Image 1 (tube, rainbow, N blue to C red):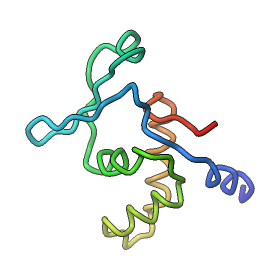
Image 2 (image 1 turned 30 degrees about the vertical axis):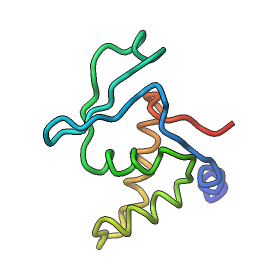
Image 3 (image 1 turned 180 degrees about the vertical axis):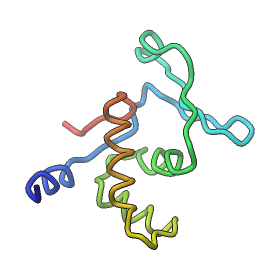
Image 4 (image 1 turned 30 degrees about the horizontal axis):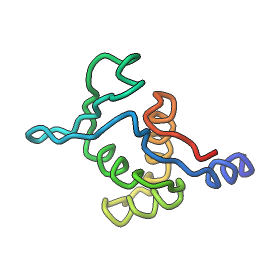
Length: 102
């Protein structure tokens, strides 16, 4: 299990450039452009934490870097930030919203 985590933590991720983030009123939306627009019809509303992570994914970054940044931004008294960030990242990845560095 520890080896899997180490492998995950060595990976670098970046926001998929085929999705743009736009603020509309108090809501953050991911809007598909280019090739993504051909396969995805609509927009994705994202919550505050997703928006925070999206902003930090504009350049390639690692999960530990994102965890550290999120812990600085948000209160994490139960120590769940690592699990939360990992869930967000792999949810983004499964939906092609972020890409892994090759």
